[in-house]
Length: 424
Ligand SMILES: *Cc1c(COP(=O)(O)O)cnc(C)c1O
Image 1 (tube, protein in one colour):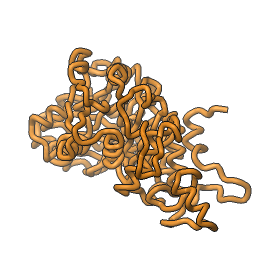
Image 2 (cartoon, rainbow, N blue to C red):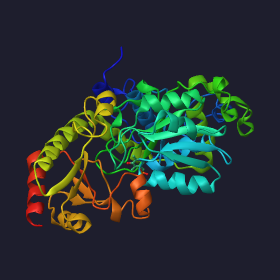
Image 3 (tube, rainbow, N blue to C red):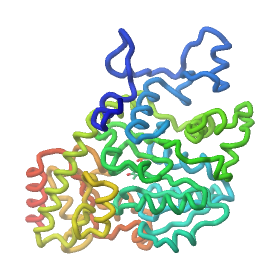
């Protein structure tokens, strides 16, 4: 029987047996005991499954990975200590010095820096393309050494929607996978695998956790990309001498990519989540479907208020019929997007800052996408390191206010905005 997504949020991942804890226990242990050297050896040789050291696997973390894999419709997942690590691992699992990747330019500022600075320093070249790049522009970006294409389903903070099907088509025509950061809509509102994406990454620090308690990330493998047929990924299709010559595609089939991410990259760099953080994430996901619905309802109410107030210069919410990406929203996120809205206040940068200081309910926080309404000025905070040119590439203007609508009473949120505008 295949459950609907609301049921999966609650029931997937952890299935207790007779007499076991009803709720996922926290295995706050770095190591696990085995009764024979042979049993332990089989784990090291990847011949048997089981936890032996928390850097590579932990029962609490593994249960949450299974839950997110089920929500996205993937064959496997790997949690990381933060979203940044998930993005990095998703790339370096299959791209190396001398290679090239293509990325949408409307992406999270941290991901932009990771690609534009750190990946370049590691010898991986990057081409950034506008989310609405034409077929010709996409085609022209590919090189013989291009290893993957990356984009954000609903970008933070620009709220651009990626045409997943189109980007996947181009990636697949060049025998490389499409990786999609699905943090903002979450699998409740967008499932990139259904449109051809091959790998999904998340910052679970946002809606998935939802309560702003645990930093985390996750990489999810659809199992759909044919690494052997692509003929470009020897790290997956030829022996890995650091693991007794294992050939990931032969031994792990559809789970080749995600298995290698763990046994090779996580083994070597160790950006492992705490089991307690995995537990907190699991608790968050239990109510994800309810929270996302309320975030969207509240965001719609706030957007409607802002649209009718002449002290506001613009409102960006992709669900609005005049939004650039309205048609893409209908296709990829028909039930709703998320709770984040961007807008400008008359008076530019200074007015924006004064408006934010006047808010009483909405908190100024370097965070978005949790149950408390919060507000941020990207140009002076998260995107501070970027030049005006790079800001524009990320779809951010100096007066843009990013408003993350929480799940409080919508009228209280609106009243707060009104009083802060009145005080300007
Ligand atoms: C926050 C965020 C990240 C980075 O995640 P961290 O958990 O903060 O490391 C990556 N992508 C998107 C879309 C984000 O919003």
